Image: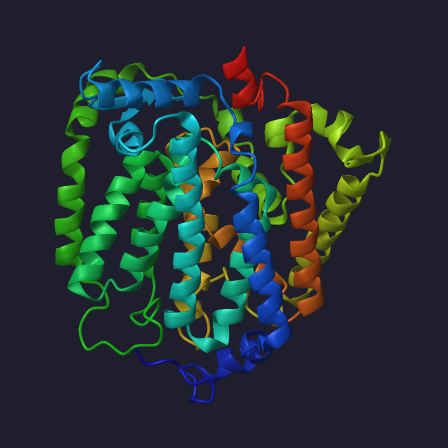
Length: 448
């Protein structure tokens, strides 16, 4: 695969002149590499500690018990999954994945180990792909995004439960890889097939796949191909359609069920839908500021004082959160001031794909702009876990804003690492969180 040489004449000199300083190749350096490596390793280890502290509520219990009953022959093969917040049953693939895990898992702890392993594998696959396929001019941004998502508090939490959304990062990698190589028959086929299956694991996958299709139709020929020149269409739509058609087959029972209940599904009010939940979740997730998602009121009552030494609060968690909040505001202010001088990486997908080193731009456009618009038109309520499917682009966005600021990137990752450790320790010491949020951990629910 041919990489773009940053010294080659850009296709748009005027545009490139404005963007040169922003998109100039960033040398990772030995120090930067070791920091990234350290954050990734620590993040992977944190996904494995205290597995019996996992959330064990109605969804997790249902997922495990149904999977085990199917494996033991107590229950027939389920063609549909559990019910969701929208008022209908999920596609069957959402439970089939856990039935496969149940074949080799004698208990919930062993099953959640497979979920944890899939998330660690997703980190490894993305990093290997970045090192092999992403142009050098942009590689450091992608790698810092992976370092950030490795230590992000909620990303770690979402890799430690028996929840269909928690396997999205692993499956989502193959959607991304297939899309990247969509000019090849195999790549287009995988993109169509796995992209369709992704939505059957969790509904957010349908919206992500649709956003990728739309951005691909909108963008120039050479985007997302790692600088390769292709003589024909950059997307083999015939094989994409073939993969999509095959991927639809497991959905037939679900489509039949939806066809009879679609008219009766209760829709959220427009006032609720127009609340900017998606951009708020994007911002909070990216900077690690959303632990209230699982801690609820305890986030404000006691977590900010963590960790406690000899019973005395240190407020280290509060300091880390304050630093991240200030960093987020500062990064957005810098972007706002520079927007008149340089085009933002998510302002125009057609322009973004032209100069070297802008492979990330359209993915941010698809996830940050097109997907929330589609969710709005579909009148879908957007909780925080809907953004798991965008793994890892929400966090790469932070690395884009902090591009070339090594100390800032190290500090942001360090602060999120501190929060992750505080969160895991808090859950372990307090045996969970509020009943309406995290709930009691698995080890105590089983003992009781």
